[in-house]
Image (tube, rainbow, N blue to C red; front, top):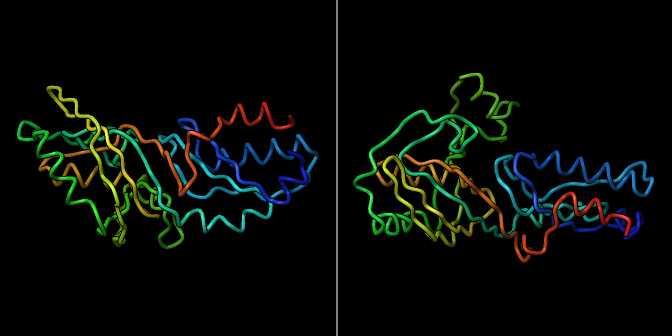
Length: 233
């Protein structure tokens, strides 16, 4: 690959590491490409945000391929992860501390599998208050961190597949591993929260990995370090 190739347009499949923001990943790759090929300016963007506590596939476009970002964002996505039943957090994941605990004695494996049926097909979902969506010019997480409450409208999303792959039960909680195939705009954190509520308990996300966007798979992605190492080869 040459600098001209990146300017003409290229699609990069990156396996985003834990605790990196999608914005940080884009900035890092843009800087490395500019430095490697002595390019003053190049467009680089990602096709769908991943939370800092999520890992997995980032589709990153360079140069003229950034015009295709909306197309990639609209494609079906696949995730794997773990929902913890028996407690909730304000952010619906591990960004914030547990704020409430719930009984789990009534939850059986059969009930867990049966409840997934409530969350397949077209459903209404409320985005988490700890999200980057904007309202009145501010990010929702800014309201949340300031302790302010705001009305968030629900949105229609589609969940094609909600598959339970493993269930582990302890005294205080139940860890449920899952695979989800869903439409653009789906918040897996909200799914975890709503799933716990549907089981008359609480739920939050403890791990999340994006495995596919359309035909692109994380199996074909590279780490940021490996991309940089092979950039000029």
